[in-house]
Amino acid sequence: MDRRIVLAYDGSINADWVARYAMQMAAALPCRQLQLIHVLDGSYTRVRIEAKFTAIAAECARLNVICQNLILELRGDVVASLLQAIPNGKHFTCLCGTRISQKSRGFLAGTIAEQLLRCQAFNVMAVRVVSPGLLGCPHTLLFPLAGHPRGFAAALPFLHMLAASVKRLYLLRVMTVSPFHFRYISALTAQKKIKEGQDYLNRVATEIRQQTTGPAWHFDRQVVLSDDWAKEILIQAGKINAGMILLGATERTLPSRFFYGNRIEQILRATSCDVGVYRTL
Image 1 (cartoon, rainbow, N blue to C red):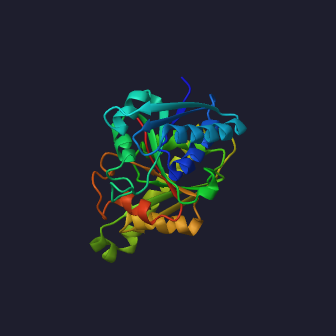
Image 2: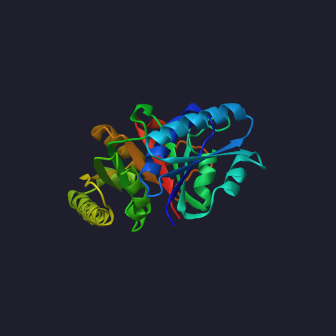
Image 3: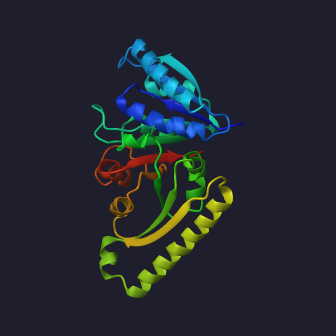
């Protein structure tokens, strides 16, 4: 079965910006189809959503993407309504926006995006758009890796769908050390950790090249030693003028409530570029 993109569209201006990503990613798939879904929760009228869908469909036509629209009555809550409408399985990817709302203090914690990332029914990417002028086409992609064997493989579907716009893929491995040990770490221990990170990124770069077709990306690789993973990612994003940071989410890293120590929340709050938080089956 071909991969399909579904956009959970809430009607906001932020959702219009996320729709740019959805259209570009749908255009990268063989089926070139995009499903728009809106749940009528009282925030916007049906007439307004229909007008917005018409505008998105016109843009899809320019990209040679087939656009299908679905407006749903609320059944229970928004997430429950979406889960009834979006087909399950790894061939379906749901895009949604993430932003601070009146009901939530965090960009992700307590939001619909967080619940979709947790549902494990289909692939999900929650996007925080900081630079709407990119039009969903980031040229430089910062891809931090935690060192897990499946870390990069889980991101491959998203890398493939972003491939048309990405010219430079920046692989980052932050070797974290506790603040106490970071202050007193020996040069030899630091060198060993850096070498370990470099070996890992070299393997990842080779496997990404082997599993990716189309135009070759320019690869950059950076290994840094730090006592603050989130801060280092933000620093590196600024240094390379990243268009987007692509972050993998797990049950452990997803915030169940807002607190300043959560690393994903820290990045979403302080980022100067777009951020995509993804989770795959």
